[in-house]
Length: 316
Image (cartoon, rainbow, N blue to C red; front, side, top):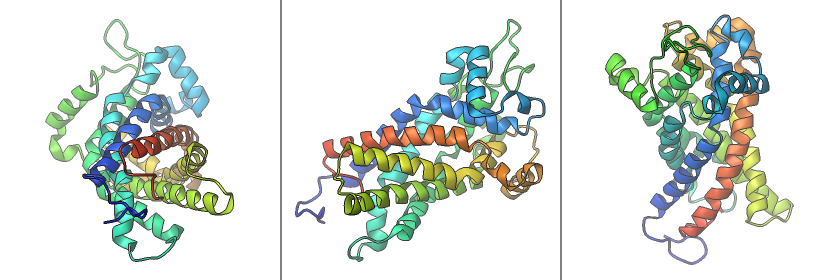
């Protein structure tokens, strides 16, 4: 096979693409984990009675967590599960995109268009999302439970204030939830995970791929950090917007420890009934505030790592 520049691809070409995407996205998840902590607190709070009034808006939620729980309470909850998730899922869903696009539309000449790129992103996003559902579930449960422990061992702040913590950390959460709910229980909310991944990754990868194409064609930009920054930032906004309805359903389902929702459709209907259609975009601001800088950082780094490992620029 040819790389399009007359040279043959290096050995383990697809593995190198997957590794570059997984490593850089996992690292970026560590940096921006605090925005995910705030997003989960905002989204899960809306179904938690009194707690809803305490966590209104992205900025106020971050300020409240910092004042009550300190920087540790903002930066660390769910960080291990988040890194594990991105190392595997982002590596596969992003790293496999060029190969999948070649497989689906390899005979096409020239640019294949935005819709076909979106379809490719939907396939890779949906295909690999289910296998990381346990890490997603653990991350959200740990972040939803996070709070300051009092002298008695009870949580004094957060959504579960007044209760004993169920989990000591992400690894402990995996063990406890596996024993309590079985392996099948670790896949609670999987339908919402797949829906969010398909819509979000489809929007992210197609917008990144196509914005690079348009900017090179009409704005005279070349492959390099400025182009990668612009494309990655736009792709983060696209992901946050396209995945918003499935994202809040996923958070509600995974944070639900009382059995309030029977499944994806029931939760979706409940969100709309409680707050109208716009409620499906609750948490969009913290989501965009996380994803836009996350993808800007990881996108630029990924392009550099791809170049270092010999696979060239993404979707070039």
